[in-house]
Image (tube, rainbow, N blue to C red; front, top):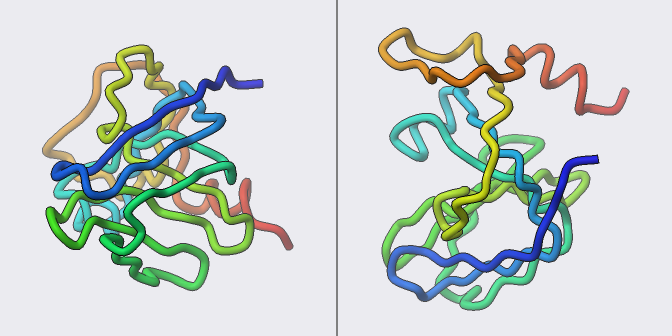
Length: 139
């Protein structure tokens, strides 16, 4: 089981705050085209499960980005905050909204969509898009 902790984070302007009861300390990078366009690079994120409380919801804009997930950002400052899986209501939150130095970068997803102009030096578990969908979708 991955280690987790209680965490609080906010957008750049501070109008939206996210409180996670069980933020995983393993950090991942998503290289899918949608995440890269949304965050101007790989989306670095942590799994915060379903026990998430949001303050400042009136400043939150939610975009239905696919049949299986939605993305949220602060409508005031534009900070990319999280994507939430529709079926499980699991929050995958931008690691950068938390002031958390104790994260462990251990996985990359949609590695087959990663452009060649950047790479990370860390040794990680890498999954293609097909492997992600096979591992995390129910049949």
